[in-house]
Image (cartoon, rainbow, N blue to C red; front, side, top):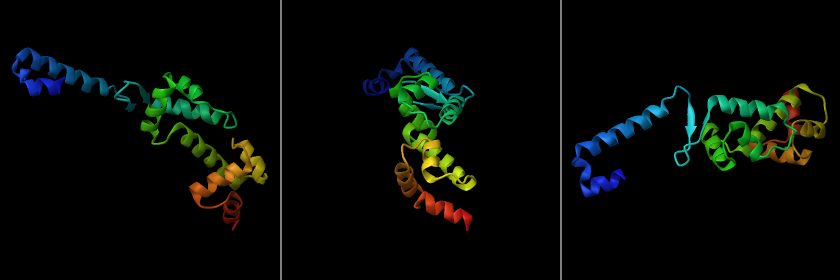
Length: 154
């Protein structure tokens, strides 16, 4: 709309100029709501830092749960489609990557503090199998869980 006005040179009208200035100011003020938000500019959906914390708490409350995008979007109070984009904007990770990182972090902690078997740790932190945990470890850390545990013991 603004581009069309510039091209057609209708911006010379003071009323139109004032309307555009007010619209721009309202948009800027709306973005300054005192809470750091990731805003999806196409949908207007946001996920505040507080909501990200709630989502993280929900994920961490039971890592073994099979989490769906619908479940996580419900916690955020937005549609799954908008949640996926706004969550990635807020955290830098897709919801799936974020959950995997939380599981990986919990697995690393368990490997450092527990004598449980690798398979038990994998299931305890929500991986579908020891092989899945091993694949994620190799891709993210460049080492298998067994070797990781040995390196910690050394």
